[in-house]
Image (spheres, one colour):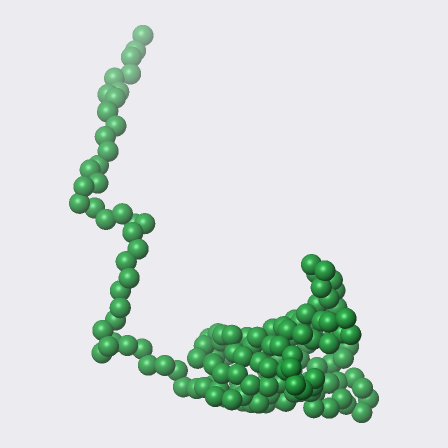
Length: 164
């Protein structure tokens, strides 16, 4: 009979004294001389078209929600496409929502709500931008301008105040 002559070693733990735990959060600020310069402003005035056939509605949480596809040309974004997701009232009019526009360089998200004075306008505010449009900021109006002669496309104009 042969016996294995393996020595058993006692498990030991390395001392943690003097070591920094990874879960510790440290904040660090760059000195003013190393601050990153803000990006050049993004102009967001432009026009959008919404094909009427793109409208879809559904019920969620007791509310009617509408989704719409849009495309057009918006300021320094140039050609852009996107969608609107909106809460609709009993008459089918938008009360509040979100507009997202994007192209291959990035996107911009706008919070929207119905203008209390002008039923054809929506107050819009840039919520945030991504990639090349990360510095987008401002607020303004998106206004329904025309319905195409064949009634298949609704047109909007976006005018921003203080867009940067």
